[in-house]
Length: 481
Ligand SMILES: *[C@@H]1O[C@H](CO)[C@@H](O)[C@H](O)[C@H]1NC(C)=O
Image (cartoon, rainbow, N blue to C red):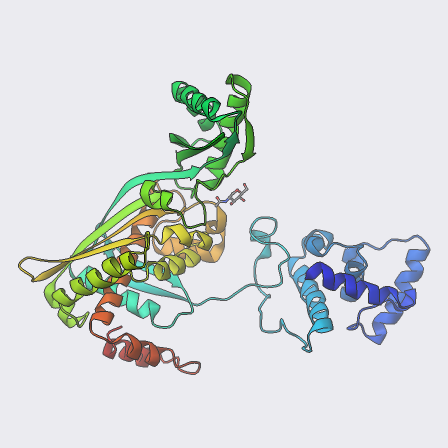
C-alpha cells in the first residue's frame, strides 16, 4: 500500500515542471521555495535535509531522495519533526485514494520520547497509541500486596478483575509455584536420512555438556536445561530449553542455539543443513499443544481458598454454584469444543491487559493465556478451593518493551522492574499474572453463576460521557462486577 501510494504521488509530481514538482498539499509559497531549491540543486549545492523546509523534505521523500523510513536519521535525530513530516506524507498519500483529510489528526504524536524507541521498538512511526491503564487490587500473592496495572479498552474488565483480587485478598491471599522456567527455540535441521538424523541426535546426547558450554558461552545468564528432539523423516527439530534469568529469553535462546549449531556444524561427524533457526516446534506466538504439555517460559500454578462468606457477600454467588459453573463451562464445555489450554473463562483478557501495561510482547498472549482452572467446594462445602495452571507464561523484566518509561513505571508499581536482587523478578511477574488471572476467573465465574454478566456489561459499556468513577464503582458493585 505504502510503496504503491508513493509511486503514484511521485508519478504525479514528475508530470509537472521541475520547479513546481510538488505534492497536492504544497502552498504557493512553497512553490517559490522549491524553485529556489531547484536552482541551487542545479548549481550543484545539495541541501541537507535538516536545512530544508518540511515541504521540501516531503518532496524529497516523494522523489526518493530521502527515505521514508529513515527520516529520523536524515533529520539528525529530530524525532518529533521526522514523525510530523511522515504523518503529512501519509496523510497526502491517503487523500489521493480516500476522500478524507487530516485522517491522522486524532492520533497523538507530540511529547513522546522517541529516542527510546528509535531503531529498537518501532519503525515508520507516525504517533503513539494511548490506552487507558487501570489497576486491579489489592491482590495478596505469596505474602505481598500488589496493585496490578492493566491496559485495556474493554469496559468492566478491570472492575471485575479488581473484585476477584479483593476476594482472594480478603480470604488470605494466593500462593503460587513456578514449576518450570525455560524459554525454547527449536531449529529445523535437514540430514541425509532418518537414520542419520537419529544418529546425530544420539551424538548430541553423548556430547551434551560440550554443546551446553557452547550455548552458555553467549550469555552470562543463559542456562541450557535440555534439548528435546522431534523427527519428521530426515528433518529433525531440536527444541533447546534455556533458563533465561530476568529476560523473557527469546533473544538469549536464539543466540545460544546459533552458537551451538555452529559448533556442531564444525565438530560433529554429520552433514546437516539448518533450514530455519526457528522450525515452529518452539512454539512462539502460535497455538501449539507442545507448549501446553511441555511448557514454555514460566510454568506457573496458583491457588487460594476463598472463604464462603466472601463468595456470598463480595462475589454474590455460592460455593456450590461457582464450582458447578467451572465444571460445566471451563472443563466440560472446553472438552466439548476440543479445546487445548482453553480450560478457563477469559485468562487472555487479563494476560493481554497486563502484558501491554508491563511492556511484554502482547503477541505471546497466544500461548501465555493457556490455562486450566479448577474449583472445588471444601471444608464440608463451606469454602471454595480455586487454582489456575498456566504452563507457558512468557515474561521478562528486562529488555524489549520493559525499558520504556511508561512500561517501567507499571513494573515498578509491582516492584518487579529490572532483574531484582535475587534475579527472580521475571518469575515474580509470572506469579502475579497467574494470580490476577485467578482473580479474573473467580469474578467472571461468579457473575455467570448468578446470571449478572450481561447486565453488568450493558451498564458499564454505555459509551462516552460516562466517566464518573464513583457512579461506575456503584454500578460495578450493584452488578457484581
Ligand atoms: C532483543 O534483542 C534486541 C537487540 O539486542 C533488543 O533491542 C531487544 O530489547 C531484545 N528483546 C527482548 C525482549 O529482550
